[in-house]
Image (cartoon, rainbow, N blue to C red; front, side):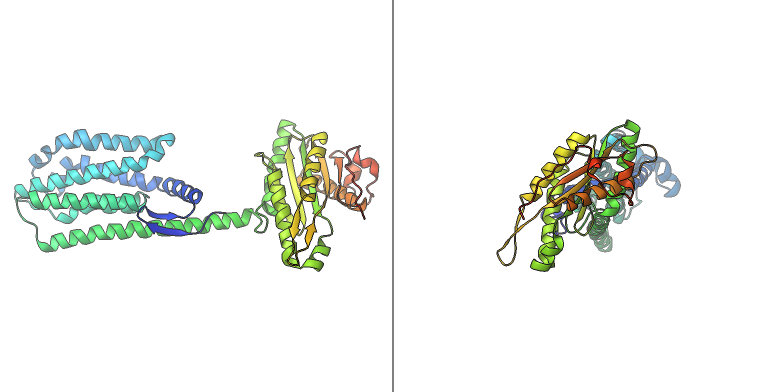
Length: 404
């Protein structure tokens, strides 16, 4: 589960947890792909297209744009090519943040120089035009607050240089509106990032709640069933053996009645942690399917390996010692049933679970704290009318008599 703390310091707005911050940054950057495309196209049209559009739309003298041709050719054009390359190549997309910063910065410098040139020809331009790229950058680029502050600082510096070198002074009203527009850009990018962080955290929390069991942190029933069905189909395609374990905590009702439901929850949580550690491979699954009952799925595990895995799980559960509020040490054991086999085209998770569940109850009947297994092909193990005799175990019993 991700950390929920959001803080603001000299590095900007960030989550308190480094993994959470890294996950958000990637999601936030990837979600800005369309906005960065829009920003790139807009800046290219407004800069590279200015020598054509300016004289038509603003009736500006073409000579003013010719004076900026070197900057357009050697600064704006390479920045635009770099930005397009990072947006088109998936592996280069992380560099698109720096690319759009360079493109917008080159556009601001171009517009500042053009404004100074036009004021010299008797066609003064509004100082607020310098904030056009800044506002688009803050709204469309999906960058963090620090990048927005850097762009606003560049805009303010460009505005100061424009007022200093312009042939005609700008009115105080223009300067005031220019500063206000820069402040609006800061507020926009800050509020957008904060809103995006909260929305991302809420979405990830919903995804986590829909996938994982809140008490144990392993998969909940729905998520386990969905992922297990995909693994079963994969095992069928590759003709690989699959093992499903059904585990039930022994005498759990006695724990609840003796120590209370809070200690019962602690027992479930500790067993869930054991099962999470026991499933370390990418295709291993552990899920809580209800109360004190759990399911585990192991890919490419045969009958002999299933016995070894089940014994390891039993040993780890048996080794738990949970201290109650009364300073008593609660000993925990579990009973396990397993189904092992290569699934066919019509095999579902239910086929594995029915057999594993009956093997688990056979373990209960034989004294608990033990393991029983059957083959997926054992049809009798799936028949609820047939009592589970010992011969269904196929020699894969792990039995340990409890000291009564």
